[in-house]
Length: 323
Image (cartoon, helix red, strand yellow):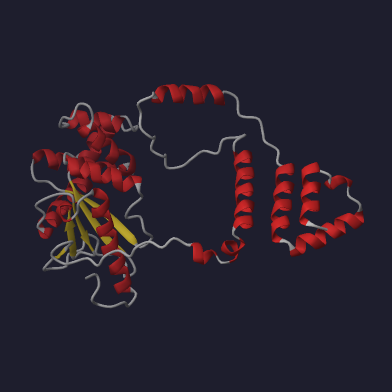
């Protein structure tokens, strides 16, 4: 059996008409020829693929989306997850099989030793104290019950602060500060009466178990098209859009629990000596601010690197970290 003979069999789709002796001869050839083995498996996979019909209305929905984007729009941002579209998944699988087989044909060694084809990423630079972060004179944690194998990261912010708004959106987009050992504690500063009101709204949302939905909504309401401060009525409307009626909002906003949380937040910000936001305090000691970075991504990278350094310290690494 030669490679050209096998190619002819694949091209003519004569697999079903082969005799037992011919099948045995093919099996023997495939066992010793990587090229033909890849071609044979690809042909079998494609022959057995069944592409389902597209779901009803898919063409109309796609057309509406294309028309809505318009000719001058830039590339769309990828959503957090992509739904699997019926009728496309099968074709995609077939394409993957073809590409994999071609790669095996062109460079068999790369398939056997994938480590040689791995793309290396540059190591992050060491953080410099006084440039990327500073140390508090007195280590102060927001949550004294944080375990020894967890890293507390305090994020001090203000709802009416544009850099805080930008940073929070970016943090959520890239799922930053979401490590298994990171405990993120968001603390609103209260430098004036309006910020004190916003802080109580933040803790009211927490007490109602809706902080994850309401905190981004409060940012949007304050920095949206109107871009105006929110009073109690405006805050109540934001809460109402997430199913919280006015009475429930008022009771939570004026509750002893919320007032106590706001008081603790004010004391914590004073202890950190915060004069600008956004500010992060890692492990109750390492402080970094927006001024230490050129972008939101760089600031988040610094905070995550500080947290990773603290994790390594907890695991017994060099006490020189994170410098």
